[in-house]
Amino acid sequence: MDPMEKIFDEMAKNPKMKKKLKIKAAFSLLLLVLFFGVIFITVGTILATKNGSFLGLTKLQFMELRSKYGIMMMVLITIHLMMNWKIFTKELKILFS
Ligand code: HEM
Image (tube, rainbow, N blue to C red; front, top):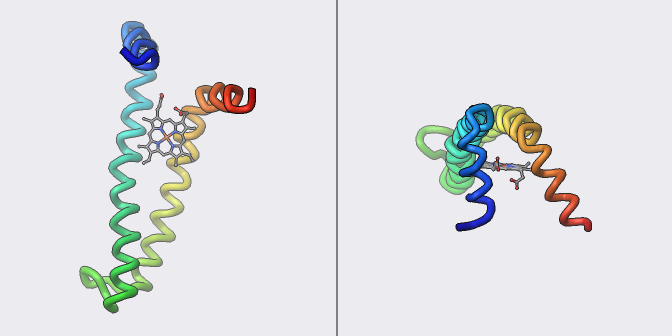
């Protein structure tokens, strides 16, 4: 088994850690679902630019949607980064060692 998988399995045995992991997993799942929205808006913007409109929305409407969606994603990604900050700093130490 992958060492990371082993660590996760061990952590899941501890109720406190399991609760923490569940919150992180729920948040990552939310990000994954919202990422499909990013793909939809990006493809929609390209198609509306090419054909004048896509699903009844003009390029300008897609751009407006994109800026609002972008702000929401920025907030959620910032929270995601904060939740994973400790792991990330450990990885950065390895990267620059
Ligand atoms: C589609 C959107 C995303 C999903 C579904 C996602 C999901 C995940 C998952 C499952 C983890 C592992 C958590 C853990 O090990 O406890 C993770 C870790 C992490 N994510 Fe994301 N993430 C997304 C976007 C991003 C973005 C845009 C950034 C940076 C701006 C980012 C930065 C990080 C960092 C720094 C970590 C911790 C280090 C690591 O595990 O490598 N993520 N993410």
